[in-house]
Length: 120
Length: 111
Picture (cartoon, each protein chain N blue to C red):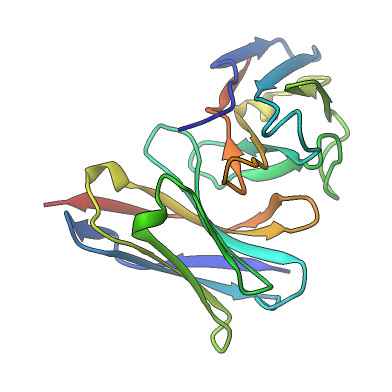
């Protein structure tokens, strides 16, 4: 059974870079037809897609975050990574990693999420 | 940032049917059959319940159904149960540059 587990610091200082990892087990991150992405949810608010890495090696980013975001994959570790630079309090959120089915553009498996708080 | 609109809340009594709307544009909902719906219980990760407008993943109750008309997609929950009380988010592919655009979410309350 596919499992995704986010990890990383729960507290990041304002203006620094937020870095998270998502370890995938029970399936290969290089499997054809799938995208691996990050979605965040500020406390008490809705979902926002951040970016995704395609099985073709292409990355896709939310235009509103594109200048600050890098999503990458380490195939040797079966791991997805997120870097978000120049963070502010507005970036405080629960960050989820998720698998996207390319054929349906739907997110069919999710990690449990990790809360990242940005504070000075 | 959301390009999709949903009602903030919908409620119903056990056994009733409710419908949640998700309105977008020709760049997303109307232009593609890539509308998905997610159920999220408090403190939990979202769960995919409908993909490609009307398809249910394996294991999802048949009480959940979806359809689309023009720029609006709909999620219907039939035979409402207490366990259906959750937040529901619609999502669509968007040609405006985002793989996934989410609606603001609808809180479903079972009376």
